[in-house]
Image (cartoon, rainbow, N blue to C red; front, side):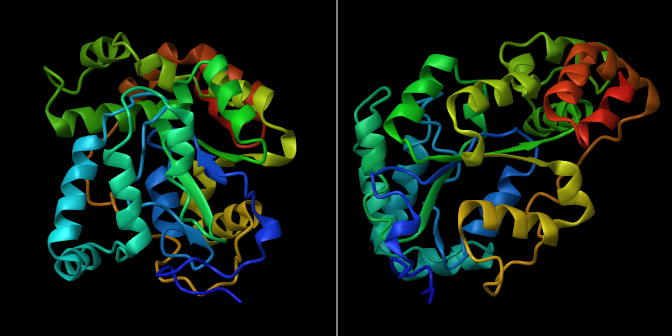
Length: 302
């Protein structure tokens, strides 16, 4: 029988790796529902997701330290008040193992230390624990191989999204943050595509191929953002089943919950869609070949 998120679960320890570290990673794609996944798993009684989404340990180590320091300060000053604030924003309450995680996180040595990373999960108990960081979609094969070797029972989730829509969503995110000069026009899109890192995050076929080469087929799962839009309840069941959680546990967050649903978005007109499809023409074809399924229809836009 499962217990609440406030304490380590009572699941059979034989069903989850006890080798230390996370039981699963979600490695992307960026702008493809990873926040939805985190919000679905964080309150589930079979899971423990640490209070920071996107550790960025393997791609941008240290980049989340300031966030962790702020959360730790608030938790240690008045945990009840901090939890009241979190619950107002539909985030689960923190308990002692979350505070212990934050202490370890802020004390981590600089750089990529895989043993310090593994130790972040020491308090997971029998709960299924994971790291949801879409930034891991751009990791090089050598880093992926190191992760796979250190955590041999690791499961990996990837949510794929139509590359044109995913690119446009990433572009809109940058517009909202105010770090793009100019209007939402084709010239601005072309400049955005030329930025370092933008195209590497757009090559979902490369990400999936790299992780598939390192992770056994039965521990790698590819899901589609299209299914999240069409039937989130079914996708939720499929993800939970793959990760080893109960798909029948009472949900405290509705399956279609979208924390970012109110974000302002510039509509993508036909001309813009065609321009982005030209930029991503090779990737659209590569996704159809690598993924099949929903991705076959994506390629018709290229």
